[in-house]
Each structure stands twice: as structure tokens, then as C-alpha cells.
Image (cartoon, rainbow, N blue to C red; front, side):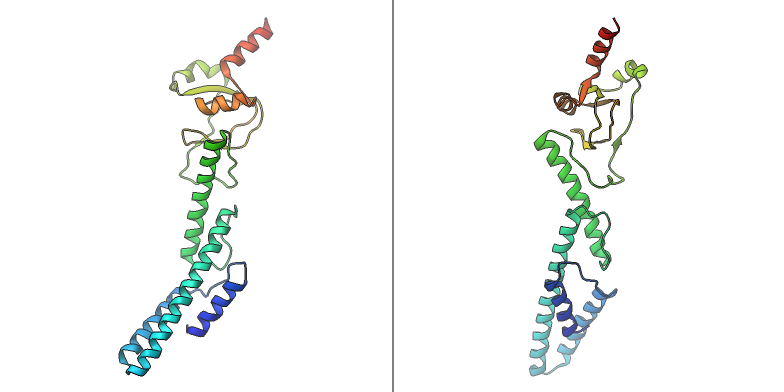
Length: 212
């Protein structure tokens, strides 16, 4: 690694929208290059030392510019919904991509649920640490399930297929038409007001009236 190679890498990052592929040992090579300049500076005379200090300062500026531009591209890619990191990323950049992607998805879901009061689309699969609520209830189990949930939840029957959403309890809900499920009261009220769900007690009364 030298100042010319750093300039070439920076030039490509500046002039292309895509993330450029870096050498596998980019970080190690840059670190060795800076260390070499430091060693040379300690042994150089005053004139040579001045040139080496200028080169080190110039090299650091280029390195910082390269990393800054790449981070901007990585954040843009991660927030666009891309599922897998593109080729050419350093190991540290891949970790950054996954972390940003996870935070963006979680934040988007929470903001949409809070502001709009309706299910928020989640484009990619939930992370392993997220709890998914896929438990479905049959009508014959209603009396048992009523005793297992607090007054903060309502049992509803889903009338239409709806997108996956995050409940006010922080859980991810995946439900489909005809599902009977316990939901946080706020989410249950929102879905019922939108006409895509019916509180189960109302559904049972309606069905009983039809039978009579």
C-alpha cells in the first residue's frame, strides 16, 4: 500500500455509486503502510521528516474519506431493504450492514405502528431474537385461553389477510383470514375499526343469532 494506491481507491469511491471491492487485506496493508512511515520518520533528517509528515497527513485524509464514503453507501444499501450484503465488503463492513439493516427494520415497524396505528410492513425476515406470535386458537379452546391472558388483550377473529405487523407488546404478529388470536387491546381495536377483524365475543353472538 502507498499513497498512489490510496488515491486510486478514493477516486473509484468518489466516482461510482456502487461500493467498490477492496483488497482482502486492505486494513492490514494500510496499517502497515502508516507504521512504515512512522518508522521512517523517526530515523529521517529534518528535511525528510517534513516530507514524511506530509505524506502521513495526506494518507490519513484519504483513508478517512474512503471509509466515510463507504459507510454512507453501506447505510444506504442497508436501509433500502437489500437482504444480503454486496460483494467487496470488509468483514467489519458486513457486520455494520447487518446491524444497520436490523435497526432500520425495527425502527420502521415501531414508527409506523405508533404513528399510523396500523400494521407495518416488514420486508425481510425477523431476526432470531425477535419473538413471533403464530399461536392460533380453535373455537373449542376459547374458554381455556381466556384465563391465560390479562385484561390487556382481546380475542379477535381475523376477517381478511393482513400484513405482518408489530403489536404494542413488541411482538411480531403473522395472521391470516379466519385466524382467531389474542391481540393487545390497542391493536385489536385498530383492526376492528378498519373492518379487518371482529372481537370474538361479537362474532359468537352474531353466529348465534344466525343459527336461531
